[in-house]
Image 1: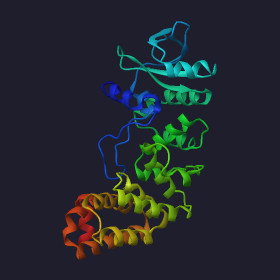
Image 2 (image 1 turned 90 degrees about the vertical axis):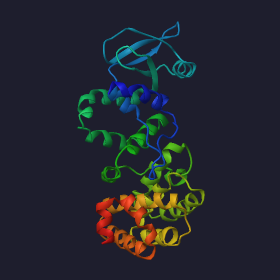
Image 3 (image 1 turned 45 degrees about the horizontal axis):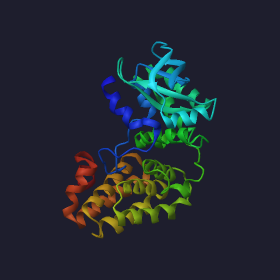
Image 4 (image 1 turned 30 degrees about the horizontal axis):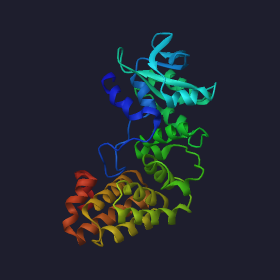
Length: 309
């Protein structure tokens, strides 16, 4: 895992929003490694505070030997935050055994405890025994620390949709007002959580947002399709197919994103929703044979064989 740490460091530096990587139809981007991924990949991690001469003094050696002092200058941003709050600390990690030290995150006491929990579980989570990882961060989506809240959403964003559906995620405060607000990289997970909320008030909001996403060909419009189907089931499937696929009013790129989301729900939804998707896809290809290749590409040959038989 060491060889991946360099690009992971750049991706999660300061836990801020990051540029999209290879685009996919569902998110519109490949989610970047989170701070947790970074801690799982490193061999040395410390909690530290600045010394008078502008370098870091170790407060707690989380991974690796206790070096006493870290030979890296405290950045202006970190120095300002740390000097203003005596209880705050910085998380630093090292790229491999001899690589550079990187300032990763500013920690309040609770965030510091979360980091320690991750480190304590490093070996188990590296080996895939990480069921508690998702639930740990699902419980933090309303944390008052915006950096910890952002990390919680990033952690949920990395999950397969079928796994996300099984989590107990508390209602996110202000979600209905923030679906299209705030940082771009948080929007897909916010959209999906709105669909998983069981709150019918999100229905008109998601339907209108989907229409706007189609008009603007937003990269993550598939998340709206997924969320609306999750919330409304059969009626949403029928409306989406009729308005955006069977009508011929949308581009092939938009159709691919929508079919990708429909394929995802076909695999994860239960009962009438999955059956409705199957029926609508079969009907769509009968009416528009030219769309058969798109359906097969997004649903996969095996599923498509069942749908189009």
